[in-house]
Amino acid sequence: MDERLQQYDDKMKKAYDFLQSDYATIRAGRANPHVLDKIKVDYYGTPTPIQQVGNISVPEARMIQIAPWEKSLIKDIEKAILSSDVGITPSNDGSVIRLVFPELTEERRKELVKEVKKKAEESKVAIRNIRRDGNDSFKKLAKADISEDEAKQLEDSLQKLTDKYVKDIDKLAEQKAGEIMTV
Image (cartoon, rainbow, N blue to C red):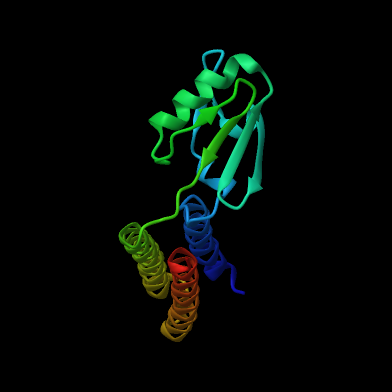
């Protein structure tokens, strides 16, 4: 691949990867430890990712269990989960915290699918903005360093790259929506 195109491919890949990691935090009826990825616990005055203060496991399909490495952290972890947007009330038995995921209602599933589609659309807009930046820079190059034909070839290649990522985003969104709607 032309190095002038490579930088735009890298940016588009980052947009796609961001969407993928964003989708991992959306809960789809089953317990997924990634819903805790954005939660930070106050650990001796430092906001620390929840994964770094305890062991996270999924003992059942709809339950996440957090075993803090220090018992004194249980209250802080509970507080962090309650103040997050996970929407689940933690329960603890003094040594571990359990998050039980209720079955999603049909209405909630539809809301989540809308959210998935919205995030996909935002990613596609980001991809198109990257394409626009690339096309602008190729047009500037055509005025100075390269022939118009070469600039046109770069623009065509960038369009193919854009189409590929938009298709990948659509496929990812469809997959996530299907996962959410599966009871």
